[in-house]
Length: 474
Image (tube, rainbow, N blue to C red):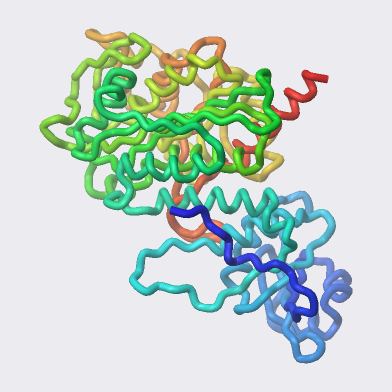
């Protein structure tokens, strides 16, 4: 699967006649007139235009051309996604967007590209003529466009039907996207996987599509031996039936997205590499399918993990934490400066925070603060939940070191995080993100289907680690 080439962007050409979108705010009529002219503004107002965020109206321009007025959010309210509406509602043609000085040009590009995203497997389905955003050659290769490419790649993976994306397929996609960027990529399977990742293997061995683990390593061209080491871990459950603790049909309907964590960190690794950040990077993906068969794990099975802890299977539908545990344990052996995992882990996180707010768990307050500041800066929210020690006892087992589910039906996202923490070294800076990875309905910049909420925040933190390291050197 190729990474998107963003055909919604058009490089500016001389003497090309362009249509213009004037991005304006409510209550600033003088600015509207200065940008579009009195006649166009009067026409727009007669059509009901008031500059509300996302409101779009076409208006006449000189020489028989067309222009548009588009409403922006209030000052100091950053929202790149609002520009996604332009990619859907503008007429076909090449458009340039004029924004006030306090609006970042990159937000226009990012939002437009994310709004233009489509996923379709319809026979003969070809896009009709659509609007294109005119950019410079540099902008087409810039951070905003590269971010959009990476996010759209992840969206493609999450949206792909499970019959087309099994564990081996996901591993193959990882190889295809990472190796051309200089990464050393290893795909582990069979007996080697069973020995190195026993908990993950126990989840995946129930399917005829056997599990895979992807381990990739990469260093930026400017990364020395003391460059920050960032380790990424992703849950790649390509389909989750729940196992013997079978999900109801309604709960199984969207389980092709249960590899959303793997898609997110794979796309994140891709962006780090194409931006050539001066970091050392490790990536681990646990690619499995949780199925029902004579080989599937059973309730009350006990498995010894890579870390040596024995785990009792209290529920076969709590498989994601089993997939992550051995990977986290191995990742910690390299002593990374930051260990980050992303997973579609619990319904409890969605009950608490809804679909748009990934839950963030962190064992160091200063590290959590980095993510909070980045989330505010990027307008890409994450919401911290506590690793509340008072609930640790809920994971006790009478026959093993711990159970994979809590003894009480409360605080499920927290107890899942506490389970994972058993496989992280106490002095390790570790962040766990519990994501929904899906849009239930379409909105500007966020079409219905797979998505990567928090992605820009995660990248921003990794980028900031580079700056911190440079400061330490000097």
